[in-house]
Length: 310
Length: 304
Image 1 (cartoon, rainbow over the protein chains, first blue to last red):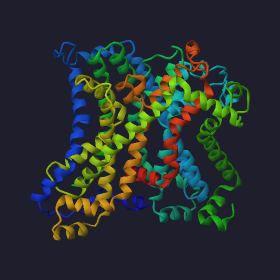
Image 2: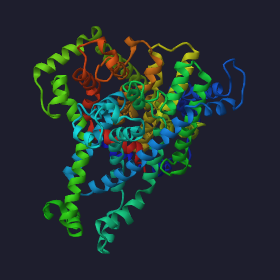
Image 3: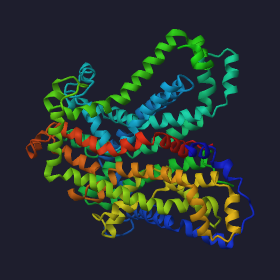
Image 4: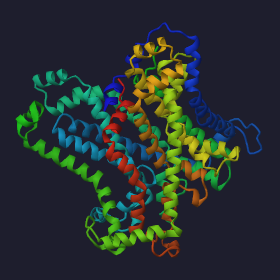
């Protein structure tokens, strides 16, 4: 499709070609006209909720300013530290699996058996369509030893019931598998695209120097992917901190075995919906917002992938 | 692996790693192939079986058309057809938001790419940051905002936040700033076209590929969203299918023995069929627009 050819080399280089001298006046006002409607949505559903959450986080239920009191108070909630511990173990598992498998698979698929490679990339990518509750449900079937197509594997691991598979100490791995199933394919496609950008002469030179495929991958290709790997890790980290759907559904099916505030976002949800405590809910949300914003800003300002023209 | 058919690179692999390497390659790729495909294959077959067959039979066996029919009847009669209400809700929310997204994001991307105004660069930067920020981080703040203006429970509390789609603005921006010849716009202006006229008559007809791309991503994102409608729409009748699936868990004996009496005709084959119905629209979109989606991912993520 046309877009792929034209859109990919865009970004920094392309944009800075813009002629410096332009007529302001008429076109300046027209510019505002084009972005006006989007600007309204951005304000109402991006900026205002963020500011309102910050406001609620620094006030109490009577609307009085309490400074950072809420921030220290929610930390002392007995559910706060475990929720962040859970998410930390989950993130480490998920990010290690993600980076090793995605880079490994992209390298393996690159430049070899073109048809098989294209088919594989599509099959790996397909579960990406099934984010949300549907994919969590599918995996609950996969993890239930009574119906799972890999029941033999679960039995070999010593899990004979669904409750065994989702025992608390195994949940970070379970959620990492779910996240990998829906998310890895998209990143494989991205890495594959990045590999295509490595000049062929470079690989040729490595070959002539007698480097094996493995050595070429490690000393030539992986270093050139570094930027993309960092990009993937930061975004996957940011998304991982927000985990909600999977623990919510697995928790609902665990008959109370899994905490209803397993992840930080669930804790915020509990504050808002079960204790009607909007101030503490906002406080946890602000913690998560800061994490998400920091990651996004890191990518935008530091990665060099999104240079906005000078 | 015959060298002439696969070219030099395959030949290099052959020389460098030999049969052992190739065997390892096939095993690893096949293993991941099974990992990614097996759950989908299992789900496609599950509704054709009875619950007993799901437990006792081969996991990838086909049951019977009769059982599929039975599961379908149970699904469609469940609580007076509430599953179809959920599917319809999903369609209404997704398509309404999609329409608003297109009307706002396409002109915005054009404005950012091809017009000049004070604050343009700032707006672009903010758009990038919000686009890269995980959407779930804003859900509770959005809920609190809607709650403050007493809009929780209204369909707009879901449709309007869905419509705010910075990624669509960014895709459009990239497209317009890289693939519309500036001379074309200048020529139209010389001919006396207004700025709105240039956009409408010149830029928009050329933007069809990116409009399709924004529409796909917006639709998939909206359809799959669970967290936002969960908090905004407490009424069962207003839920989209993703939230409906969550509600169903409570009435499926296999996952919730306590509430098993709620409906004896609803068990795992029915739950699998409903899951299949929930993902069917997205699956169709993916199968028919594979190349467009992949190119969009590259545009959104691989910019050099």
